Image (cartoon, rainbow, N blue to C red; front, top):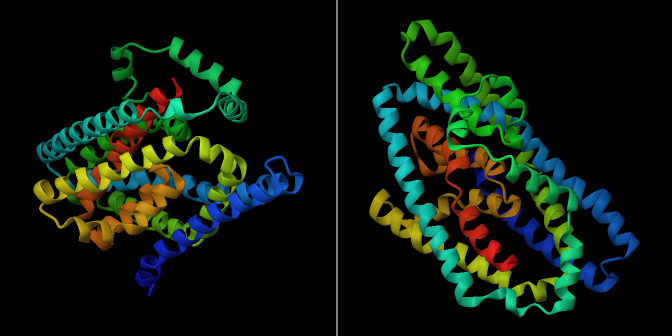
Length: 342
């Protein structure tokens, strides 16, 4: 019964997403973007509901990621096999991310959505989303950019606990490297020596999955709140102005997912694309609604094992690393967005 409930979750998330978009747009159109009642509802109800859902997922990402990655590497066992899987994953990441960037650049240079916004609407949108503090912080970070050698050195954390604390603010990759090294060390020791430790990580992984199960019960409400807040704040006028840009991003993302990935599934993975997309429908909707790889990772791990039928050791390794390293959608989206903003 849990499997059936989990399988029907995608319908509830879709309903929450559509209702949030429609309700937010109608309220903004009827009341106006500056209506005090609407602003109060967004600030005190819609946004907190969305943030509560995301926070419940984010709070368990670190223990889930660590236990999944350690167990995946430990169960793969042979360091040479880990290297082969890692190299294949890296090659596919480069191939698919490069294709995504190419699609994004071709699309934005062909359509040129930035030329379709009037000057007054452009100024309104810029004022609506201008965040001077964040801009200043980004400039400061770019000025403090480290050399390639320093970046490589910092992949191995001096203090893994600090990396865990800062996981959601840039410390995730060093923490994952620590988990990889930890898993390789477990795999290199006699089974009887590390049996108790592996049992602890299996328990941690199971508990993390159960917490995610609790969190996903809030998913329809959380998604409604997230999308309602965006639609009510942005409004129809901005959507009309940004319509060509938004549609271009969605069309390019859809092309990459349903054409490029279908070809990869058919000819590299030797799987039927339609069956695969049907089995990961909850993952796709969660990713679309949250726009976060880390928020989607727990659902992806569960779906990979229960719906797609992948071995846990392979999916744990590839998905956890891929959540940070293989962000095709981000690569495509940012390629379009940078030229659009310029």
